[in-house]
Image (cartoon, rainbow, N blue to C red; front, top):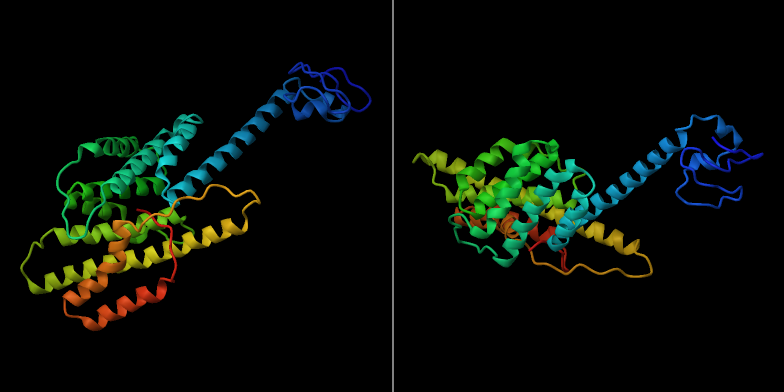
Length: 314
């Protein structure tokens, strides 16, 4: 309350800004100040609380837009944009620091793999000096334990991927065992999460191939071979789901695009891990002499992949 006319409050005692009956005046004056005269009965701090509420709502809306943009960039592998978005994220809430660590760790690892692509048949060995920051970011995010469970899963999957790149296959397998890949739901997962899970299965298969079996028993070798193939089959199936989801989202964005076209993200090559997941299962079937299963798997992949370019991660 303050000075009241027949229908409108003219001056707010709480924020001391004038408001004309016509609705003019400083924009900062809160919504309570221009309510009908009955609003004058509110407590002196009412308009301040209302202004704070409106400010909080605006901040949440801005935060939501930022989260959507981060998700889009992760799905489209625009890692250079992540650094800029992380600065905006960290400026909002201190609690977002762990999320920022996760995002920076992921972006720097993916950029490294883009600049130093892995090749089929090679075995990564030893720590990479350029990846020191990646491990620092991920370790900080994981050790503090403030991330939600789904984000902890993401940070662990990125860490396992880093372990593979540095040749620590046993540690990577230990992480996958703790995470429980089979328990991560695929339904309603954003594209970036589908890609992450597909690559995790592919990386697990690669790690199992690199490590020797602890027994010479033939049956155990057969079981190990089947476990490896199963990893690649799951990786391939989820990779196809990822490609379909990316295509669906891109089609929807094109249909909803404003008349003024925005900048298009550059096309990117298939990642080493997705490519391995799509190709390795039928290769192993052929290698093990199971031509029927190999041909069947190969046909499944061909029938699922439609002609035309897909925007995937390099």
